[in-house]
Length: 299
Image 1 (cartoon, one colour):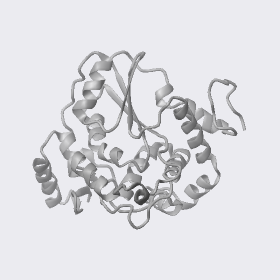
Image 2 (spheres, one colour):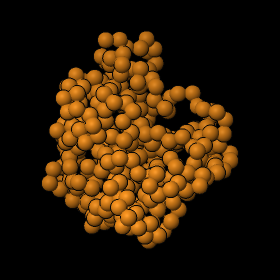
Image 3 (spheres, helix red, strand yellow):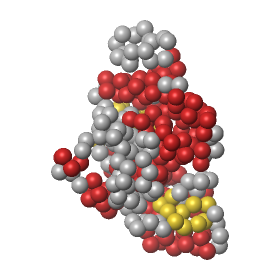
Image 4 (tube, one colour):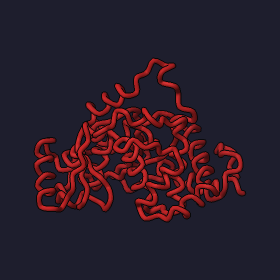
């Protein structure tokens, strides 16, 4: 197995060439794009509830801001999950705070019955999808979050991760063989080493880059706050594209929350709900009710 010759880069010992090449290609470390364009990189983990809460903003960037490029960079929050009881930390109350702050539906008891012992396996599952179907990796990250915060599933379990992959059309055997090869774990470790060497530890962390300028901010960001940061880095405001048709927001199999649709279409929650209910009445969408907010999918 090859390792890079540059001793200034502290790679994980034994990282394979495939893992090293992917780590070298991280969006953060590539040369930036044309002047005036902005690159927003989100340091994330599938288990990050604040990153789930950021999904409406991500959708808005994707559909409304053509001069802002967004990408996710998966690191890893906890090699060993701390015991909330020992710390006097109420997870369900925390989830309720995130839900009220972001408007995204969150099952408060998402981790009550099957609490993960580490977030790292879920991150490795993401890298498994990068290996078998790289074009599906971003959608898979989204589906992992849905499985946690809508379905109360422990995506650090390999069987659950494979279930999510199968629902996206990936054969279970192919996913499981790639995971068992150890290659996704090596890529994850190589990337994590690169992040830690750049003092990137907080989830979420946003990095905004334009030309040689780079700004970094930790913690959840609303759309106005993130756009303000982008404007500071690029030196200009970024025009918005017209809202897309409602049904163009939906990909096969993916569920969207009312809050996400409201953000993209620049509507109130009530107005977005009316639009979605109309699409459900005509048979275009189906509605899935959750205690903290409905989600919708293509019929």
